[in-house]
Image 1 (cartoon, rainbow, N blue to C red):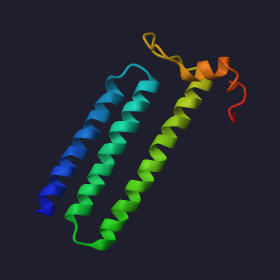
Image 2 (image 1 turned 180 degrees about the horizontal axis):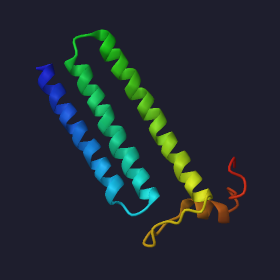
Image 3 (image 1 turned 180 degrees about the vertical axis):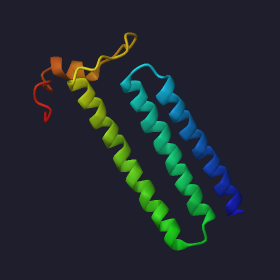
Length: 119
């Protein structure tokens, strides 16, 4: 029974990864593409690893899958944030139909500075 559940979870994870990849191709700017990559691919890859944990009969393999899932959950959003902030500081423009620019709002309010990437 756990192998059937594992296959179902892996299939859902592959679909999320596929949707994330389609988002990387179809979305209009770097910021929207980062959102697709971060949300869909993180969830999809973690679901695939959970499916592996359900299917495998080896505790060592299940532990490795769990460690990898935790690593992905921590590093993927952090990396996407760093890429988005770096793109904004470098002057990469938002899509013309974007309605909110939180980084620009922070700079106008004096909470951040374009000249100082550490702030």
